[in-house]
Structure formats: C-alpha cells, structure tokens
Image (cartoon, rainbow over all chains, first blue to last red; front, side, top):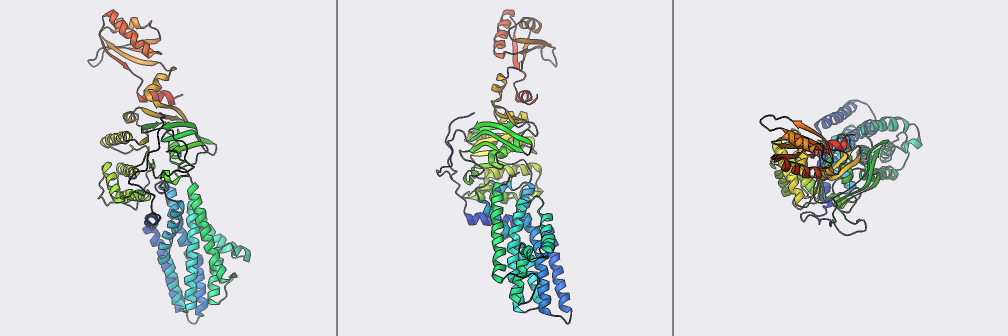
Length: 255
Length: 320
C-alpha cells in the first residue's frame, strides 16, 4: 500500500483563513448555541426578580439609598451575575465537548485561542444585556448618585470579563462545570473567601467589592484592595484563564 | 499551507502511521499499529471496540498518540494547524451544530478552512450528497440519513486531500448507500486518500479491495483482502466445482496433493450437483481439477472460491 508520493499541493480554492472572519464565524455560532430559549428565560427571570427587588427597596422609606444601592449591587454582582455567566460561559465550548460536535471546530486550521476569545465574547454578548444592564438599572432605581451607578458599571464590567474567562475555561477543563462553578461561587466565594483577607484575595468577588467601595467611598466588608488592583487583578485573571483555556483546548482529546 | 518548514517529515504516503499506540488508563485501545496509505479508498474493518474510531481520531490528530507517530501529508496533525485544513472528517457521532441549517453548517466549515467562496463550496458539497442547499430547516429536523449526508458535505467542502469517514453509511437507504460508495470511489480516483470504516462488509467490498483490519487494538492485516486470503496458509481454501460428473471428479480429486477434504453437493433448485473441496494449495488445485476433468472428459461449469470474499477474510482474521 505504500508508495512514495509528494504531498498534494494546497487546494487552489483555499487560503489560510482570515482571523477576523474566522472569529466572527465562531462567535456567531457560539452565540446561537448558548442562547437557548430555556437559558434565556431562566436567567432573564432571575434578572427580573432583581428588578422587582430594586422596586421594593425603592418603595421602602426612610432608608439610606447609597448604602442600600451598594448592598444591592454587591449582592447581585456576587451571585446573580456569576451564576448567569456560569450558565452561558461554561456551555459555550463545554456543550460542544459534551456532545462531540467540538470536532467540527477543532479540526480546522484555526488557533484555539480564537475559539476561546469568541466564546468569552459570546458570553459577554448574552449576559451583558440580560443581567448586567438590569442590575445597573436596578441600582440606579435605588440611588441615582453618579458615583454609585458608575461603580456598578465598572464593577459589573470587570466581573463580567473575569467570570466569563474563568467559566469558559472551566467548560473546557471540567466534565461537569455547572456544579463545580456553583461550588466556586457559593461555597468558595460565598463562605470561604468571605472569612478572611487572604482567602478574599483568591476570589473575584473581593476585587469587585473593592471597586464598589473605592468608587463610592462607602465601606464594604473585606473590600481592602485599591481601585487599580481591584480592576487589574481580575482582568489579569481573565487573561490567564483565557490562555489556560486555549492551551487546554489545543491539548484536549476530541471525541 | 505547504510552505516549507523544519517540521515536515519525509513523505512516504499521504497517511503514515508508525508503531502508534494509545491507551486509556489500563486499557490499550490501539497497540503498535503501523501502516501507510496513499491515494485511493481504504476500508478500515473491525468488530465493535476493536479500536477503529480511536485509530481514525489519531490519524486526524483529534487524540494524542501515546507512543509512535502519525503523519498526514508529512506533518503531525495533532500540532500542525495547516495540515488540518487538508483533512476532512465525518465522525461517527451524530451531534452537529443544531442551531444551524445544513448550508450554514457546511459553509462554516468552509469559512474555518479558508475556502475562497464558502457559499458556493457549501452549495456544491450539499448537492454532491444530494441535499438541497436552499433548505432552511434546522439540522435538528433532519432524518438520520440526512444528517449523515450533511456530515459528509462538511467533510468535503474544503476539498481535502485526506478524507476520514467513520461509519459513513449508517442511516442511509440502499440507493443513497450506492451513491455514496460511487462518490467515495470517485474521490479516491481523483487522488484523495479516503479512509472509510464500516461494518457493512458487502458494501465495503464495493469500495475496492484495500483493507485495514483492526482487531483488539492491533492491525490484524492490511492490503488487498484477496491477497491477504492467499497468505492465510493456516486456513484451507474452500472451492466449489460444478460438473456433469461430480462423483467421478470427486473420486479423482480426493487423493490430490494439498486436498484436505472433498464433499459432494446434491443438485438443488435446478442447479447441477457439485463438489466442494478444501485445499491448502488453491493454485495447485486449479491445475489438478483441469487435468482431472480432461482425463474424465467431464464438463466444468464452475470453479468458484467460496471463502475469498471480504466477509470470510474478516471472519478468519478477527475470530480466535
């Protein structure tokens, strides 16, 4: 069966794919894949609950609106937003790994980092309007102070980017990213990292909390890093997670 | 994509597998398999769990080779991005991107491979497998056979040099199977290396005669299956002879060199009786039967090997 032969030339109709074109194609695919009706309704309903809660808080009188708004946005950026990002982010590539359709992306002349960045972008595209905006709006309903609103915007964006990269990487690395992600959000960030300063530095929540505190001048428990660190460290974590996810995707065994 | 670099190994075949092994924990899925394939269709055969799919995944670089090497067009498909654009795969699993319609799915494959006109290429690939490029239904609404053809279309859209098809005939009706078999043969004749795994042996036989037989993770045999059969000295050849003098011919043949047994077949359904001979030297037997017939003035109507079909060869190779 063996016969010496030169490698066939590249197909004349083929060229190295353009990065932007490939990114947009993968982004579009992943966006359509993760935005299922069930997920949108479920997470959208949670965002709706957040808005209703803001209305209830707003109707309570008298109250310290800045403190209430800060507590509200802190709670939402600590639980609702990471859970929403987990649901969509871990599914972006994780679903393809689970059902075996990853082969149709993997076996192409495309760098894995493009898939990972496209997955992060798709997650941000869904979660930002579905949860990010409602949380900021709800915060503004409670207190329209520009410092509070801008803190919610900056904290929300930093949290979105960091959690998206983390949970996209988790979807590539873990067989069951949802329960593991919930353990991280609820157990690690919710309890362990809230217990002390050192552990708090190992949780995105701690940095987001610091952003909120620094930008509003109001105190929050364990919000003990400066504003620059509060923004930079989660973004560095996001880059590291994206890098790890890309490496892992390149080395993964594809079914 | 074929720009020279230091990572290119000397090319012997389009697909070169050298002492490749793969294990999952304690289970050895593929053990020291070596083969080299060039243009044409090669059928990969083996019972369930023999390691065929793992071997195909290794050829595509989808899974790491724990030992040995795999080269496609002289490059490592596991690490070389460029060579991936020259491979087309239709995997065994049914999952596809279900949010898409068939044209979008195939077009996406074209875009990711850098095809110049992905729309046109997708439409051509879909027509090649007898699907309508204008069908806007999601793939979720497709039958199993239609999904199978969509998978084939996306494997073809980048005009690959190496085509790996894992059980591509599953779910297809007989007419579609015939069409696909013809298509595979045509692709092989055009200079592509087409590797097809299948359980349907009588259809595999129609791809051509080149086979890779995998059993228990090892390569049991490779090459032309009729040549493989001839090399199997430990298995007697079974040959049927139809003649107007079966008893007389049987009596002459029973003492022939290399003849291990002779059995008379009674006439049935309007067909004349025959003699079934087991021999360990088929070539010599063919000479002897001609001489014996001439001596007896018997008319020979048929001399047919009964066990050099693919199914018999496969059975001999994979059964202990």
